Each structure stands twice: as structure tokens, then as C-alpha cells.
Amino acid sequence: MGVSPYAGERKYARFSLDVRAKLIGGGLEITVRTLDISEGGVGIVSPGEIAPGTLFAIEFVFPTMQDVFRAKAVVNNRKGFRWGLEFADIDETNLALLRKYQRRWGALAKQKV
Image (cartoon, rainbow, N blue to C red; front, side):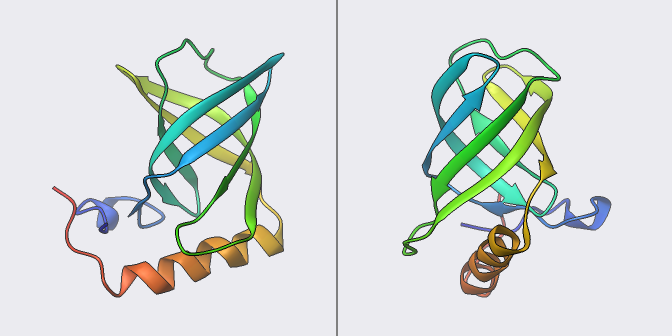
């Protein structure tokens, strides 16, 4: 769990996040694994093909939390099996969940290598 050492070059700091998530959209429902998250988007690992520009609903539960996080995100980039999704729509309730996660784990975070 950590904050990206590149946070100074980005609009939002990224935090490690390793949970199972569901992507729904483009006629697909895919189970993926998250890598990291920021207020701008989420990094995932997916063995399948996902078309860049595809809009998905993403759902998952943060560790030690019970509420389901939901947002709309568009596939922005790919590097191997790693995909970058940019949040296209995130409501205040889900943004509050994300910020709660960042506060809870950010204080304990070690630098991500």
C-alpha cells in the first residue's frame, strides 16, 4: 500500500489498491483486479481485451469498508495487461468513499516501488 512516487507529476496522488472489481459496459461484464486508484481514475489488470474509449461502470469494495464503490470510467490507456481507466462520472457519495480510503491508508502508506 503506498503513494506513487510520481504523484508530483500528476493531478491526483495514486494509492495502491488490490481488490477484485467488476466492469460492466460495452456488452461485457468483466472481473478484473485493481492496482491503484486516484480521484482521476483507477489502474486495473485484465487478461482480456478491452477497447480503448469503452465506457464502463466499475464496482468494488475498498478493504475494511462495506459500501460498494461505483463510478463510470472510460478506458484510457494500456500497457500489457495493465489498463488505465479515467473516471468519467463519480458522484459525491463515491468520491467521499474514495477520499475516506485515501485518508485511512495514505497515512500508513509506504512508497510504491
